[in-house]
Image 1 (cartoon, rainbow, N blue to C red):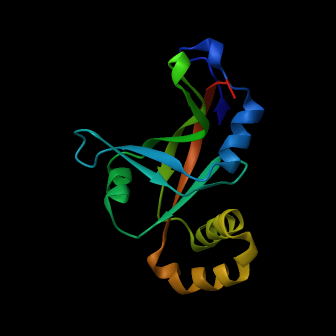
Image 2 (cartoon, rainbow, N blue to C red; image 1 turned 90 degrees about the vertical axis):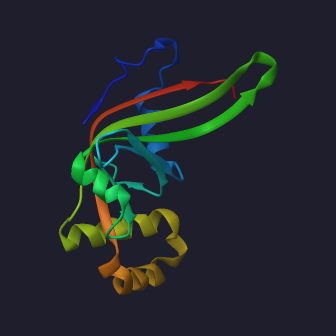
Length: 162
C-alpha cells in the first residue's frame, strides 16, 4: 500500500498521512464504488467497514447480491470515507476532509479470516457487546459474506475551516 497525494489536483488541500489514517480508522461508514456488473456504468453504496490498521479494509454483506456480482466482474474498486464537513454559505464553500483508497476486492475468504473480520467489526461498532456479538456472528456465519479490500493506494485531502 502506498500513501500518495501526487495525483490530487488541489495540492494546497492535502491531508497528512497521520490524519488520513485516523479518519480511516474512526469513520462510521464509507462509500464503496464499483464498476457495474455489466460493465456499463458504476455502482456506489455506503457500507459499514473496519480497517485492520494494515493493508486491508473489511466489509460484511449477504452472501449474494449486486455488490458481489460487481466484484466478480471487476475486483478493482474505490473506497472513500468522509470526515468532518461544514457548509460555509457566506463564503460559498464547504470545509471537509476525505480519504480515497484504490483497492482490489476479494471474497470467498477462508473461515478464519472471515471470523477475524467479524471480530474486528464488533470491536469497532459494538465493543461493549462483543461476547453477545460473537455468539450472533457464529449463528449467522453461514449467511454472512466478508469482503476484503486490499489497499493499493491511499490519498487524502481537506479544506480545514473548522
